[in-house]
Image (tube, rainbow, N blue to C red; front, side):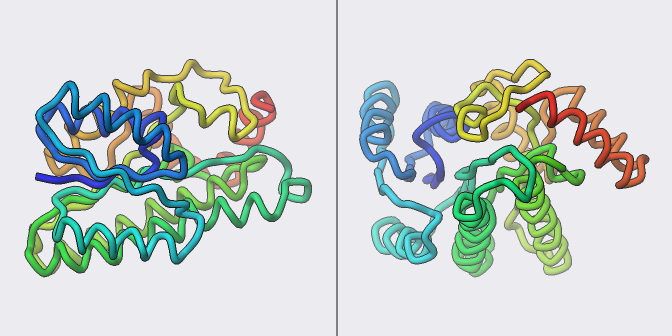
Length: 255
């Protein structure tokens, strides 16, 4: 069994890689930070009877996404699990935030997920076997003033995954897609996004284990923690205008 994890150099991606290794999966790990990936490879191969292939890529670049697929296909053939975890956010008013940063965010959070999901899904459908987990966020359930671009990218990830799931269901395919929608997690995301969460972040190792366990049980939408599950429920009942006002108040306390 073999799994590909993007954004594996830190945070949830790193901890998912560690947990998959404990479950006996060989790994392909990718991120921009080659040195961090090499350290993880050494640690996981030492502690587990598995093999780890390091493939450094910048998934904000379209061709890097395609070359990642081609290299994985050439070296490993079909994979059992794809985890699209790479992504980042940024906080601030839309008129003030840096356009280059936002376009890089769109490329990483949307285009990379779209490309890798499509390419690997085709192979999985052909052999009628495989799992994909796309990492979204509780942000996917509502509009997000002061993090408008980030929230929008995560909504795309959620809706894309739901739509594909319905297509697979109608085909009676054995390929499964899960979407992870966590709230605040203790990772480097906060520093990159320039935010400080009002709520206490959940432990990254716990989120990684919980998410993979649920994925292996074919859970389609994975929300971690009672508060996040309640938030999802309440956003269904509330009008978007009220959700937007709520988000603005919450986000303004983060900056």
